Structure formats: C-alpha cells, structure tokens
Length: 99
Image (cartoon, rainbow, N blue to C red; front, top):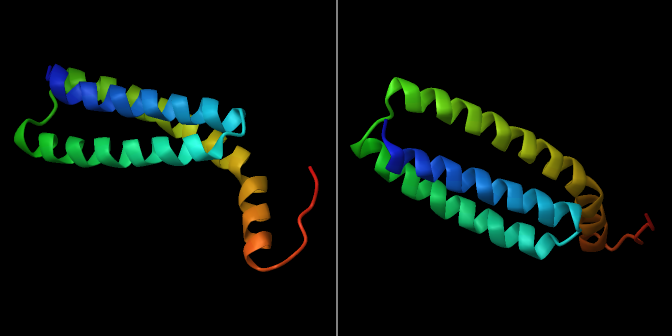
C-alpha cells in the first residue's frame, strides 16, 4: 500500500467534511476557502499518482474515501442551492427573498 498517496485522499476527505460543517453553519466564505485547499490537494495528488500508483488494497480504501467525499459534496450542493439562487438574484438586480 502507498500510505503517502492515500494520505492525499484522506486529506481531501477531511477538507470535504470541513466544507460540509461550514456549509451547515452557513459560513460560505469558509466553504470557498476550503474548496481552494481541495483544489491544491487534488493537484498534488495528481502529481504524486503519476509517480506511485495505488496498490489494490489502497485502491479499495480510495474507493471508500471517494464515496464519502461524494456524499459530502452532494449535501454541500443541496445546502448551497438557496445561497446560489440569492447570489444570482443579487447579481441580476432582483430583490432577495427571505428564507
């Protein structure tokens, strides 16, 4: 197993969980900040993966981690929908609605 490579997936999962916590709290600035951290981690992961691919065991662990990340992402998107609609309305000069 390549623990170094797997640690990137774990770090992305943690950032994803932190993003979800921030989204639940309505702290969208923090969500955006953490999203930037995820982009950096993913970039580093891609570079590391070219040099040392995952073993079969690590690939299974990766799959479990990715499933959790996708669940977090889906909930973040669900929580972001009203915020994004308000942002779009603001950008287009439409009155905001109250939630």
